Length: 118
Image 1: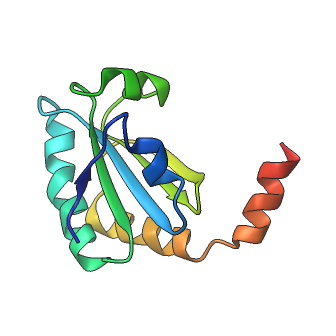
Image 2 (image 1 turned 135 degrees about the vertical axis):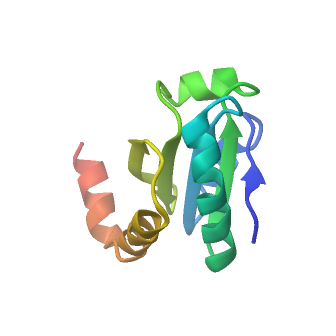
């Protein structure tokens, strides 16, 4: 699978799906974003069961603002519609793989309990 461009029109529908969705907020002028892009793309090929989405913060300024993006690249991980990870900065390939493994191994019943308790 390759990455999918996400817009305000399909962002919510995409991240609320069951399964894992990783979203990269980026911009063409951002050097760390350009460095992270091939790492993200390669991971999308390695993990076809995960949805990999990209949000161009220049083209989708309102979406980026609504998501509270203040630095790029920012990576978000959703599992079964719940935001389980959010961090700014480009990840090396091994760190992205560790993140994917950690998201796969989450006990979602426990995560849902914590979310409900908030």
